[in-house]
Image 1 (cartoon, rainbow over the protein chains, first blue to last red):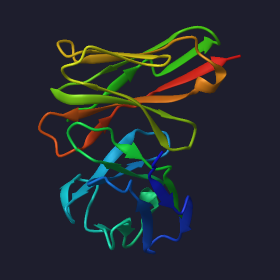
Image 2 (cartoon, rainbow over the protein chains, first blue to last red):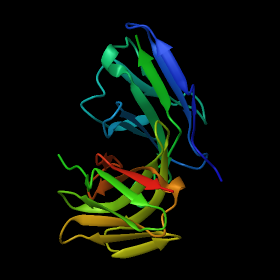
Image 3 (cartoon, helix red, strand yellow):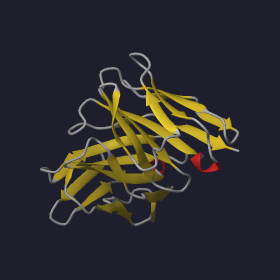
Length: 114
Length: 112
């Protein structure tokens, strides 16, 4: 069964460093998402992406964040200058139809900012 | 802002018993999805129920949706120790661009 994959599974970085989290969505899906979950808290939406542009972003997704689909398979989340409070599990998700279909989530990348 | 809210926050049962978790939300929805998360791991999709559906089954899972009460329930029958996990509901609003709103989840513990 097709699945969303994410790399790395765990990333440790120093405050102020840039990180890039990578995702490979399911191949025939058209809508892509990033969510995050701070330890012990609920999953929060960051951004949605369709047709090579951002379709919606939350208040969390400020200028430090950017997303890109550099080729036909990868979907990346970049954090330019990490802060301690960016430490969280980051999930990528994809779906074929944003209104009717399931969003399938990847296994997540645990980001630790020291 | 609209958010799913699950109750109970924690549920502890014996193997073989049924587990019922509830979810409430505040605005109209397009669909509601239930996910499972093992400790520190990814989100596994369990079941999706659309706003025009009232009940759905998948194996040992039964989901109901009451749009008049803005609530949903997830029933796991004949629970197993392997069902121990956190369970989240996530709602998709009618006017959304696909953003899911998650609740805080129910931590289910099934004792062997």
